Amino acid sequence: MESQIKPSDSHTTSGYTQNKARADGNRDTGGVSPSQKSLFAVDSILRLLAIGATLAAAIVMGTNKQTVAVPLPLGPGGASVLAPLSAKYHYSPAFIFFVVANAIACGYTVLSLIPSVAGKLAARSGAHAPASAFLLAVADLVMVALVMAGASAAAAIAYVGYKGNSHTQWLKICDNFDRFCHHTAGAIASSFVGVIILLILTVISIYSIYKRTSCAR
Image 1: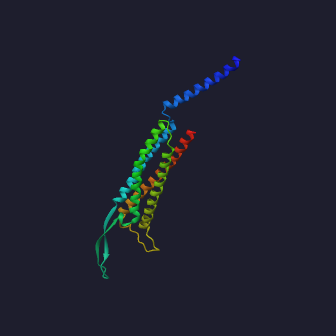
Image 2: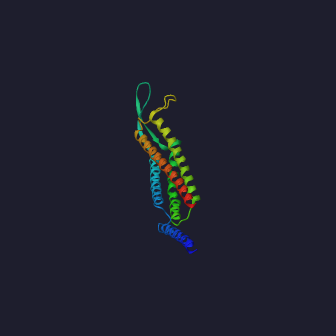
Image 3: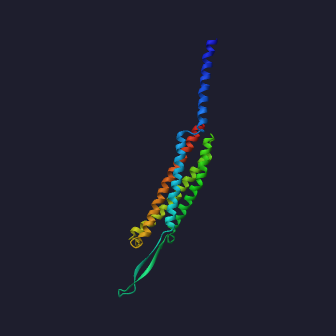
């Protein structure tokens, strides 16, 4: 009878020892695996890059203006006079929407650092907060749509400024307002970079939810 019980006791003791070792290992690492630590670091870096991209886009477009002297004909005699013409971002509703969209995305990304850091602390303590992670992922996706809409609208107007439209008799203006158009192109490019970063952040947030829920099972 003793020979039948001892192997069972040895197996139980071995299983208990292994479980205790795993628990001690998780306690030593704060309940966060190396992959999760890397994910947290990437998330923080990308949010800082998104802040820089959207802030640069909003500032460059919001301060974009240029005044040039354009010759205007006075009459059939061929005489002309130089008249100052200005190009400013707020002359176009699309550019105004562009600035507002990027400013909102920048402000959101700054605020999103708070729940992001809170999620890291919760993970370190072994707690799971899928609800906050889900809200963060949804908010990231909303910012992707908002910035993409603003950048696309601004890009459409900028294209007309560069190329014009012969069908509607819209003349291109970038031959005269070259600096204004270059700044516009730079702001739009920076905004699209922000869109890509925010999209990556959305994927990371969704993956983080998956990892947390799978670990909680």
